[in-house]
Length: 261
Image 1 (cartoon, one colour):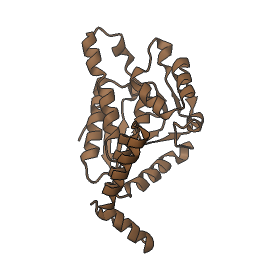
Image 2: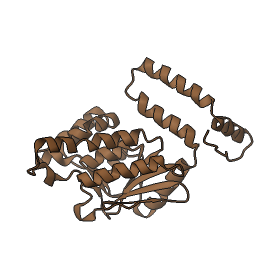
Image 3: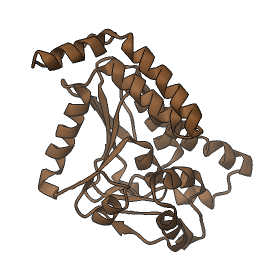
Image 4: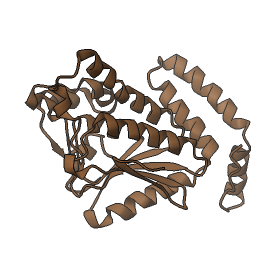
């Protein structure tokens, strides 16, 4: 499958890599790029050989600078602008319901709308020197489309600081406040991302899907409703062959042979 705004490949270890590939625009989130991102994630979700998805960039210093600002001030009809923004929530939901673990490999700056896409992923691994922020306020815009994700991932006061000041923070600070899972030195970044992705891809695909779906579904439930829902999911997990195989492998001190059922 070929794309004009990104690169897509699947390794023999079951890792699908989606790399934003519009360096001339610093991977601005155009309608075309967002549409192809949706298509690529759908392809990864439907591919039974894929156990983990890594989202990254081919740009040397920038993951993505965020939305295509030229479109904000364009002459497009208001209704068309409104309809085009539907790609953001569609992508966020697709990543959340993918059923497979996702890693944002932030090899460069993650700004504006791109921060929302990064936060939609399960894990964020950053290269030292990458910066994170929502600078929209500085050009008279506000990050409405990604606000829900920010407040679900960042402590409230820090989230508000990012939104209102529009200042960028370092990868180390992003890790400190819980945006980033791990920061790698530049020379160790690619190997580090590959190691994390291969560990995730090696898990039971069926139990991973059950767990991922549960994570997405329960996050906004009332506490008691979440407990009832998660108890039911555990009962479903008990019915799988993979949970039996995993326990047997543990006691037999060997690697499990996942069946996916």
